[in-house]
Length: 374
Ligand SMILES: NC(=O)c1ccc[n+]([C@@H]2O[C@H](COP(=O)([O-])OP(=O)(O)OC[C@H]3O[C@@H](n4cnc5c(N)ncnc54)[C@H](O)[C@@H]3O)[C@@H](O)[C@H]2O)c1
Image (cartoon, rainbow, N blue to C red; front, side, top):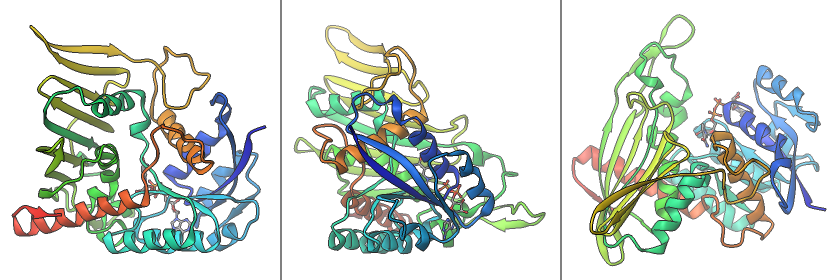
């Protein structure tokens, strides 16, 4: 019998519901050592809480996260709330003696992320941060190719995440468009953890950064007939240098809310003198690999459904967002149970703090129009 872990959600919005979806089909995981069940949900909005009535295992619906944290029916808490609430709610979770899967960016700024990381250390609880795209089969293949070190001297790396719905100026503002709730880092807080996770795990830490940040639509409808100021950065290009095999290599992180035609495109490209690899969610079952021989060859591999954790899903089928999100949860619960083995794990608190150090340096770089050392 697999051990059962009972999960509570604080913040039942877009991402809270994705967790309910992943846990509701936990049975697709093959020979997984942990069973998982959603038992409690907290959201301040009644309409959001109501949605969870359809999940039969949920016993507690509450507007007060203290009530959820007091429940003996909750072992692990997933928190998906606006960024200005991260630090306090994460602290409450740890003080209640629960383990935590935190949403990015792990605090609204560097100071908050450090405070949370310190609390994690002193609490001894198991804490990781969310970033799901690296769990896609194509991303995993790219990661393993990079680790094998057969690409020759690395020439350059691009790691990016592009959105496009903000191109529409009539899209209403929400908390993600305002500094007080999203954070001064703006789009870096929204999309940044997704682009640093894999490079950081490969040990590629920026030594310096030159940042280009853009605010594009600075006012939007507020959804109530008026207008709201949108003061966060919309697009961010971070030109960095990392050390790979003793050489300095340019690594560009791209985070964009306004990228024409890109609804939700996560990509990683690593180019070397002997080989290269490219993966993008734009072509979710395609892996591009480069080989330099007598001829130069970009080869396209049609991938199947092979995530780090086996499932009953047919090996020829295509993976998507719900699948990598579920694989990320499997990685979290496997690591918590000491059963991750050599598989890829979720973002650690140390990596989350590093991401904030990079974003803070990017703010400084943009302000001074100079490169900023880390
Ligand atoms: N991993 C990903 O791919 C991904 C994608 C989107 C967002 N996120 C992150 O998830 C978090 C939430 O984003 P979202 O898109 O789900 O936002 P959302 O606005 O859809 O949901 C947030 C929910 O939190 C609730 N809430 C606000 N204050 C609360 C409180 N004090 N107690 C309980 N509930 C409260 C709101 O009512 C809302 O339902 C953010 O940190 C965001 O960066 C992650």
